Length: 510
Image (cartoon, rainbow, N blue to C red; front, side, top):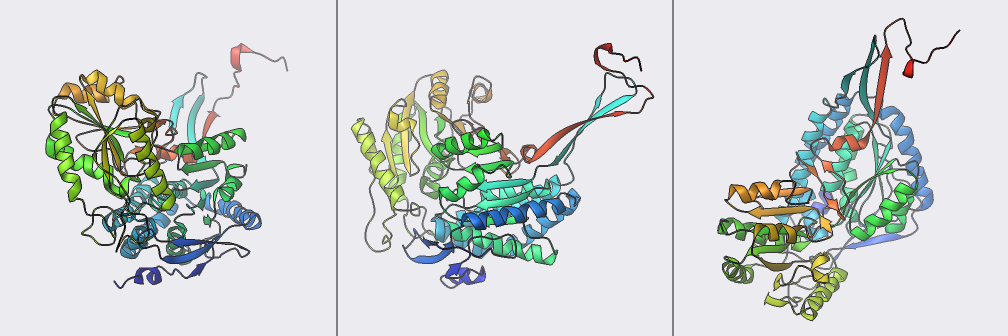
């Protein structure tokens, strides 16, 4: 594929409407977001910023569509999602390239993200026939009880730049088969990815003659996001981003008695025990730390290493890091691409300064790369530092490829160190010792939403409910029974007797 040919294949233009209700865009944008690639700093295209008037028109379309969409049988809604999965298969290459180019992750990771979209479509199709309720015994004779799940309404989705398409699909595909309609505000750092997804879904909308409002997008900064967080017409808001953002969103939504699914920061650790397979350690730790240039919520931030193998791990990693190839992520020979923007680079440099101030020892030094191929100013060196877990900088998540090494003596100490941060998303242990593995997975083990054995922290399985505890937010997306968050539960009692027994034996004389 020719350079930038993928933009044309996706139907993207130099100037794109940013507010859509389906096949139709809502006119009225007065300002635009300019998207520049962190890969080469070049301008990709602009996207219209949603005004309050455009937002209200979008919500009105979504409310109207919900009246129709909720009446469609769930398996029929699943068929719509199945067709979307087929479209994604057809456009996996150009969409994956766009993800890589606009966000900066490696090309294989870009393709992998689109594959996640395809996988969640497949999952949702099966789910559409399994939105089961329960039948329960009543304490009253001649009665039966059951519970059922109904569509909730409009689901607002706020996504982050690091997974600019997959996280939207996790929410949207589940919401759609559940009978909900979606309004998506993409990250202002990756707006073209959202436009591309909308263009692809339009093919399905058109083929099935579906109403406007089932899939809507809005664009802009946090102010546009606030339209949804404060809007009682949006019963559920699913937001992915920083802990700081999550606090604001969670409080605003709770203040109007709405529901929220929050997927926030991670400060993920791998415990490396004496019995660990060192080949697995190297692979899991390195990819976890440098994949997506350390800009995953599941990125490995800390290695908690037993004192008996500490020097071995330290030496191995120190030799491996200089072999990492940093550069254009669309080149499959490179391992590490750029950070999202220069602001992220500043945060990276600030964190390095804080580590040094705390007397952390760098085994592999960091820094910003300059020269040919690094013109965007967003390429940095993955680095490794020896630290102590309680330091403020270690307790804080830096969205960059900085890896911390921490020593431990006992498995109890290791688990305490793993849990000793405000975040609780992903965790892992490398061990061949059954007792250590089982303790890590027990109630006295990892306090994270994800706990892995002999696999790193990075990534998520579509079939499992994704999310974390503590400052990670507590929400769940994707697999298992995460679908229940997108529906309302209703308990029903049916009296098939000729009597109406009242509670506590109350009787009326009439």
